[in-house]
Length: 509
Image (cartoon, rainbow, N blue to C red; front, side):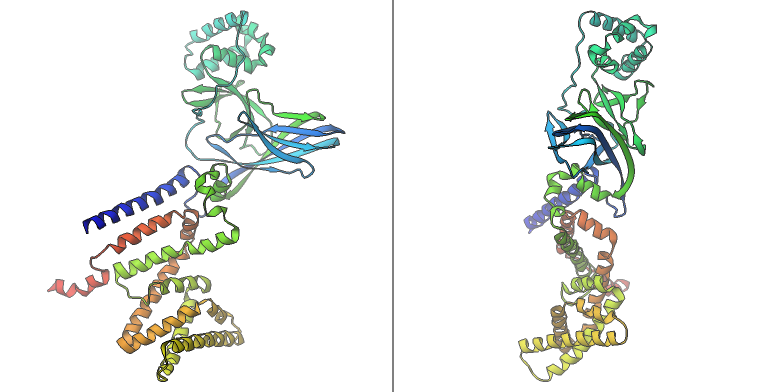
């Protein structure tokens, strides 16, 4: 017995850990929302590529932004039906490529990205397996000038990577104050520009840095591509404005180009350029989480969200049934409410979801009341069990038809809702209540019927909750928690609430 109890507790613990653990993972790391009304701000960024085609085959390639720790690209939409589109990846760099066999004259290509910010609360952390960005090495006189400049920079007390980079950029912005900086800037074309020169100097000082170009998402309308210098300090990238010499908040900065990655390449065209525009939208948070790159984890990829839409609609209702079963278990085993069968309250509650509570209660009482009257007449004929239940089924259908026609003739379609009641279950309920009436009397029928309707009403109130529906569909793993609760209720052998009231007089004595 103790072994069984221990097994049960272990099983309950495993179910709780799995159900709650997966739910927390989806909320904290995949961005799923616990509230059905929670919405996520999504920026739609459009890249407009224009060029002049020369009359032959054309191939256009543009660099695509990557998912970072905080910014997630939800989807990439190609808006050009005339061009064949594909995404290529080489050495970890993704590029969108358009091609066409023949194009002549001015051409425009549009690409839209939906991007949202994941609230991780972290900075832009460096990846563990991230290769250090390539940098042009210093040599000859450039090396000696760099050592002299770095000595001057360190003499000003700049030791940590960010302050050292800021002071170095300050010296390069004012070359007239430092002869080494002035001489190095004369060689900047050798390094690919002043920012790349700064990277080489930082590399000489033992600081890892990279040049990033991108757009700010919190700026609506036309956006220009801005260049910044990112410096690695510890495990975090800090983005420095090379002109203002301040650390820029990178939470809403979408990096489109890093280091020497080419932004745009056009074959078969001239005068190419790319411009950007962004607009802010608001969409359901879970939709973003499912459609994002992070949502393509096996946990989501092998889930209800990959089923056809009609199947998902069916499961939306089926996933609610275990919550109804939990209410039945609580009402029967903990409260002590007697019901007519175990599943009847759940089925009646599901019917109430279609008819509304009060109309459903009225129709249920009317159908069962008429059915019991007709069933009492059949009892006088001494029929065998199967023909008798079949006759009750026929009576139920006739009652359905009569209620529907009479209601429609009276100008109301409320009676038509009677068809949502499961006729087989109603027929069997009438048969059971009739037998119960004969054996236990009307009081027991009233108690069990009233208990069934009370439990059905509670299940209806639970299942009609928007929050419960959202949690059941978005977090199906919560069914494991429901199962754990049902198993714990099943092992309970103490007094029910109704029994405590029953023995209350003994306590007073």
